[in-house]
Image (tube, rainbow over all chains, first blue to last red; front, side):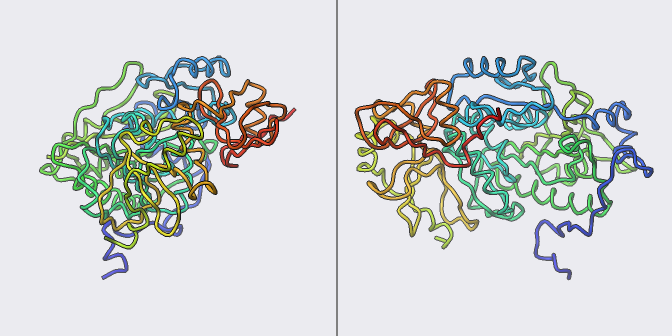
Length: 328
Length: 157
């Protein structure tokens, strides 16, 4: 028996399990080259991943009607453009600092990476429902859920790591959200008594290949062992969320990485008797790719094709993966 | 009930507290009570307000349910910024509406000078209808009580 035998998520990665950071263009090759067989344009992906990330903001309609704040955004940043499929959200050029705007300080605006806006909305949270955000900090998607629910109902925002709790609570308070209970359990073993929930969001810890643009294109090469450990944790989190929602309930699984081991591979480990993966309607103006049916010789369950991949070069954003499951 | 959950105990609607807030700022008690639940944090005088319902026992530790309404019983305690951001738009007295220049000063944490008013004590500071936070009046000055985490650094000349 190993020391992780009692951990429903299995062994956790440590620093020793990872490789040192690498710069794009190192002699060893770019970390994203491993996806050459599943991305439509590898050169475009790598080139985009080296560029600074555009910013995005959305209006907190809990505290304000959107029109005056939309006007303020366009006044402060004339190059702001609406985000496809996300009402009251704007894309801003890289280098813009919306965190210095008074509207941000007042909680009327929130800044969030564009690629992560729409997936949170896929949860479909409705006013009055009970919704679980299993890996909540720093709270960007929790806030999206609260706005979708008109701050009416119950959101349980769980965050295992205490160091991340202050950011979560700060964001909730800045935006004046009152429907959220913040708890600090291990997402893989949250008790049944916390549920049942109508919906859940499982935005899992991952190897974060899609967020490299936030750090100047710096990408960390990940080891097979790290990806295996991550997928073990991710599977434990997703299974727990599916057990905590009622039959017929919705679970959205999301990562900010490209690795199929952490995306389709995790979905494949969910029993088809427990949940189906639903098709997702992609908003006009947003370019995506379907989940990949196989990777490195492993064939996945057929409905992983309903999952959505957001490659960085498709919309000039970060990278993201999202799937919507329905518990049977 | 687990020891951790006991940190937040559900309580009845604190009518006296809400009436005091209505008397102070004109925020209707009925509007604050509507649809909300109230919790007292054990070992403290804090009262929290939330739409959320969580049922004991809850083994994970609960860090917050909604937002803190007040950190100490009045008159020592006053409702905080998070609560006011949600309900301050309903206030009808002890309200100061800022212009653009005053907002910049207030968000920096500085005192607003020469803002005359008739009523003493704590005021709700708003900008274009949105609540910025709380200030205390001393003569014609309004001292900023915005938490440091919500302040903006003054623009560099």
